[in-house]
Length: 192
Image 1: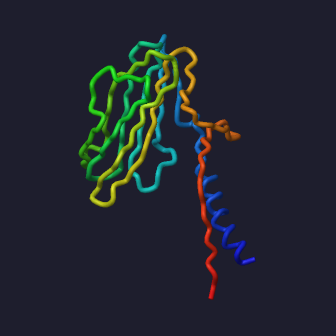
Image 2: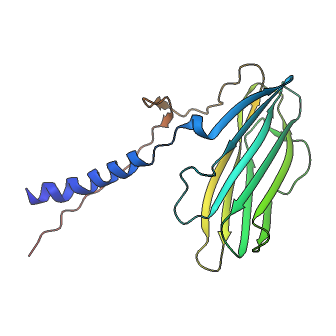
Image 3: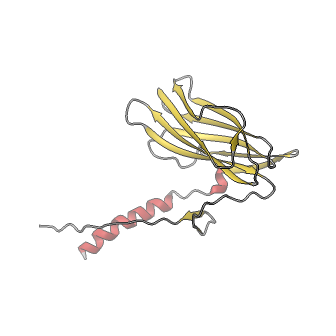
């Protein structure tokens, strides 16, 4: 009985914690039509964030047709008082940067400067839902804190996500779940 409790208790705790951190994707992204343009806005401010990574992101992109340039405006904000924010930007295949920007950027944090803007233009020759991925690192003198973000870029009338041989299942909420192989070992510790 004790062994079963020892094995099941951590699983119960993990399940309760994971369930309490559900995020509805509809809460973080909004789509607005302004005239002939469709604007996609999103933010992580006020939503669940990685504990210990003091950085949030807000974005605004325009939905465009194939071969048109989409404006992408990203704002990173931090609660850190000092240090540096380092950003590594990676864009999906078939999505091209129109203007030249440094894909590895860094910003100095000060009490007066905690918000940083990254503006770019991208385009694609093919319809689809593409992503600009960012790996951010907050260096505050201690161990660096990492957090990743993805900014959607919609191209075409009915953009569909571009998948590369990844199997997705749907959760009850409609959220995609990727299935990966994993190996787990459990060791039972005997009491003396």
